[in-house]
Length: 314
Image (cartoon, rainbow, N blue to C red):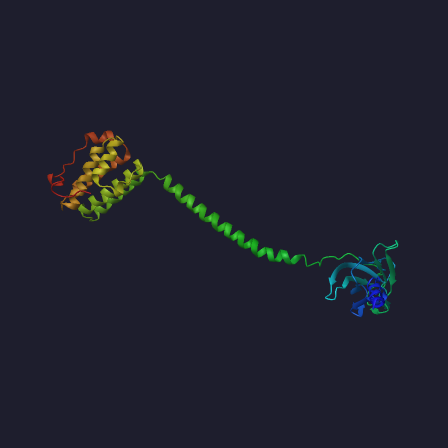
């Protein structure tokens, strides 16, 4: 029994031999320059390191190395499998035997190491359908696409961006022109033109009470643009406070016109056309800035009903 155990221990300590090496390759037929996948499996006891070296590939041979990787797998019975996977480029033509290699155990060249050369018996068929001068692996080149296609796709994008930019610039230009037109409008000239137009409307039959209401709106718009406060939204007393704080000349005259218009609107006053035209002339003088002429103008009489106790004012 002791002899049997010793024999098994001696067998377990034996380095791997050719019987422990398996080689598998695919495909079995390929063209010159195509890739051949070769997998080498070495089964051993795992007591000493095992490696696969010296694969017979390179310039002047039938195969050239493209890629190599290896892994070690321990089996359930305690043994180890070394798997070496390689991708080879095939050259030459006809039937080609798979390249040989060297299996090294431990430290090769010393008493504790060993090595042997393994040459697989299997082969593959390489069909020569390419240029006969192809004898080595050439670097891979990226595919070259048509050079004009990206430019064709870029043109619509550039056109769309250009149209959007043109639209934005056009809108900006219109906005700036509108703002500049409003900013450079002369409030005095605009008010005098509207007053003259109102006088022509009176000649065509516009009722004087409606003329006073239009006059009030023209004066309020002039004050708002000339002195920069919201006269169109304020009542007459608020306008009076604003004019007094700004020390506007002849402010009493324009306030009398506004009060007269408020009286006609809210207290149902009945002005005649001559009075309305006289008020238009006074308003025109005030808007023109010739306030010194207003001192010689006839004062406008506002009836007592315009007081705060008799009725509201705007």
